[in-house]
Image (cartoon, rainbow, N blue to C red; front, side, top):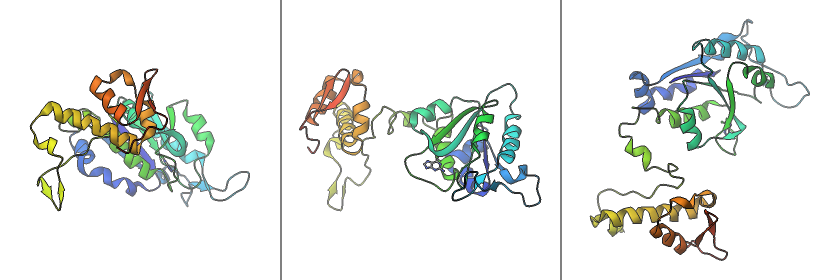
Length: 266
Ligand code: 6GU
């Protein structure tokens, strides 16, 4: 995969040289280029922003430097249609499913806006060259797209073949099956009056798998009830259904439904 990031703060992306993603780049599994938007300006002051038409607070990023930058990175891979991701609190919500989808692409381009955003005509114009996707990390506001790109590139990059050493570790993690991950423990088994759940020391792998699954349901019901309602009940075993009934969830029309007056506190 090739990733291009355009930003007025290229140094913000330096952490992508570290750890798993840095190693993937060194190993040639991921080609990642960071571009300074100002190198695509033509005026003495390298201006990237101007005042908003219609008035109001703040500044808007000018269209032409963005068009120059995006034309330059789109030309790098002829014949393909790269995906242009525009980080914005006004975008569709980023999640694990979107990470998997984007991990299949040949080229991703991230356009990091700052100030009040990029002139909207860039988004319209870019559709000639790119599949354009405004994407948000969640319902809060960042000062610019750079931190969001760090998160998205890490989430996508670790799904590329060979990046995570043991692909098994992608299978049992939070959100991979629509549920939160079960809790994990390591030595010592007794620590400051807190013991590891005895089942994990039993050596009974069937029982351990069942306990972990139950913990996933318990945690998800407590912390993310929104995920419970969307869960596909078609994949549930009898033991799962019993665990869920104990947590106050019934299966209605193939979906989980919190039982009225049901209690997730047990
Ligand atoms: Cl992706 N970008 C910006 N600038 N702010 C955000 C965001 C993205 N997601 C949440 N807030």
